Length: 324
Ligand code: UDP
Image (tube, rainbow, N blue to C red; front, side, top):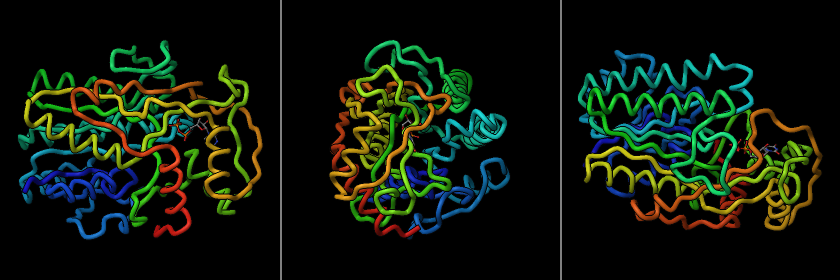
């Protein structure tokens, strides 16, 4: 059984990937400092609490388990916060990843799967964003992720470390079991916020900007189910090991939905009406982000299975019965 170290495996996307790795016969080892993650999300998998800044601790883990590959989910992800506190983002999302990569090289760990983001592209210059799209991030969060992408290219050339970069568009939804799901403090993401309004856990939803050059004036995003993302991680890992080659993939559904459409669809699915207010634009938000994931489909054989309806239904199921 292959041991995969999942850094940030107690967080939202990490915990879903851990569950799927286990189902596919891998042995995921969760490494998390629990600053944002939840122990309840780890379930019965091997768990090591620690911080990737702590190189001694990392070396200890690499000695204790024969690790075949490392997946990294332990980043800060809020665009607005990254504009206010860039230092925090550069330290965690860049410096700490550098410690991890150094330790991987020292311990001869050959494969790395890195969670990157659509935010590395900045304002789109074409309708759908494929892997050849220029990368000019418009916020510090996107900058930190792009720096690591560049570091990975240099690490491959110098040390032979192979990596797969997976650029997520808007991750959403929850596992069908309802056992794990999204839980951020504070919550800043659209779908959980809208569902919390439907569940009467918050008084309203604010639409950040209604003057964008889009059909209804609100931003358009490409929502992709967290289990579809998890599937892509497994396929990417298998491909990287088979071919011993680095690669990058954009992961989205290829469909764009506006903030207003998400709100309307959520009202329909939940059958609950709630208050919606307009608010100024949020800094650092591009108007439209839609993926072209043809490469992931062709090279990895990846095809997303969850519709927007299913994304909202699974997230609603989680919101009503959340465990953490
Ligand atoms: N958004 C909004 N109200 C909210 C949260 C988000 O209007 O309470 C908008 C946000 O401005 C963006 C879109 O929803 O246009 C998706 O934001 P989210 O934070 O979910 O993901 P991001 O695209 O920033 O990764």
